[in-house]
Image (cartoon, rainbow, N blue to C red; front, side, top):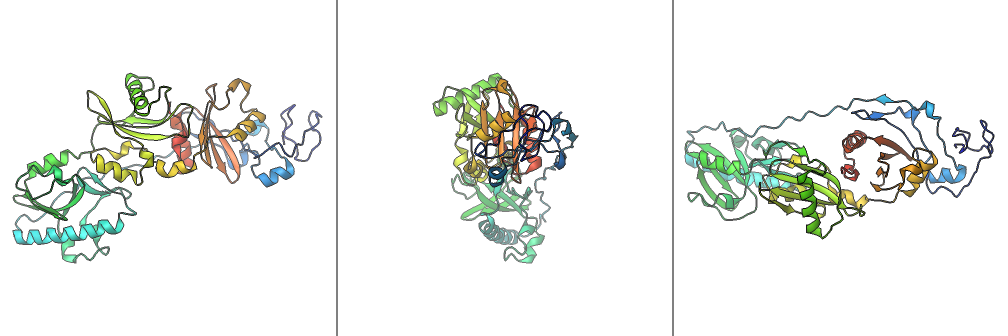
Length: 425
């Protein structure tokens, strides 16, 4: 435990402090949970401590009830150890390119296309429960694999004849209604994405889909269609706090839900066409919602709201906005993560006060608090910010300078960490 008088660590069962002689108060009912504190400084990058240098408080309730231990090493033992964060290098997958034999007889072309339609739909139906298939730039895309779907992917996973694996088949993922204006195609006006198998000929691409007869679309018209599905809308960037566009977005969100008190923003990024926001109304940290806004250049419209209620949200967003660059979306799935959301961390805050890692000057102690069962983000009125992680029964608290460092730190701990708990603004 720690002597409150001189802040010296003493043995758990000591009656008086060996350093200053003060009587120690053993109150077995004081702690509902024990909390461990680890300080890690952040200078541009995230800093960690070695495990043997952790500043901790025993979190095991049973042990705490028996010993009432508050075990902190002297502050002089806390040392910083910088760790370089290695970001994964992501290489954008190039769109499929046709190398088809343009002199293949047309009857043979349609035989290949029809068989490909059957097999690719079998493939999709068999694996769509576990694989998020998306329309990316107008092609069928396996999002978890970060790769376009090719005919070779169906080898051994469908009953496709091996002879078709050598064909330069293309799999487009389009809405038939976007092809309807081309009178030489036999398609419906459906607004639902469908997989079109295609094979290039001298006159263009022979395409067809399940229950869509299709036809041969010339290359120029196909390019126009595919351009409308392009994910390229400029650089993805963070929206600046209290900028004109920030204030406009907050105003639109407030009007949408009938809230005039502002928002605690967890995520606000945009490209040149779409904006993604994750936010909660001020004072309501449990009410987290996700929105997609469309910037037409003249006005902002909310295209999709309450994304946190949508199962398989990436596919649902893609169905509605197939040209939205899904890299704009946060990495987490709110629909699953919000089940574990909490906002009462009184015990942690009391332990931080007791350990003098925050003081009365930081009041109010929880100007913003959000977290789950194993991660917490705390922001104090003084401006101090902390990310906490429950590790083997001990809370470790990291002071952070800004939200970006906080997210990096959480991702280093767990690639699937609920970083939406961190307040961006």
